[in-house]
Image 1 (cartoon, helix red, strand yellow):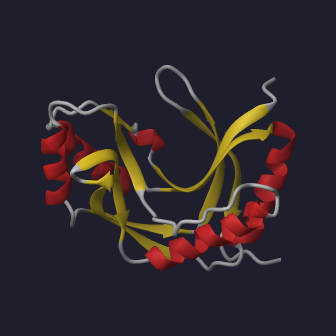
Image 2 (cartoon, helix red, strand yellow):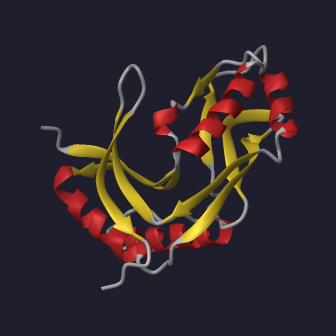
Length: 193
């Protein structure tokens, strides 16, 4: 048995949101840039990436996440606006951002970051930017300029709303055909006691 698990905390999205994100991916795919697209089954909003975690410690991570998310009441979050890191002119990571509920998502991240910091995980020093990663540009070349233009043209794109009711602690197994995620634990928002 593997002694460590590549672990992260995320918010799942619904099938309608997933379908809208896939539509945007298809639009962006037309640019012909060399992009590794996120598979529809793997689309999620990452709250915190933890890296390799000892298998025997995952229960402590799940308990800490439960404590952190209990401090935030459930809320609605809108997946809105296509964008890229570092920017649309030099896209490396392609994403759909947030609209309504963005401040609540930031607060949720901050609570999770704080409780996991007490377990020794490195705290974020930059302000959290809620986003749904849809692809990563592998290298420059043909199509990247057109891809950047498409990102700018879809700045108002909407993938709909999600009801944020729980956070999920996932393990990620990297394979040749892409990562395989497995839920290690689910933590309900606002669940005090």
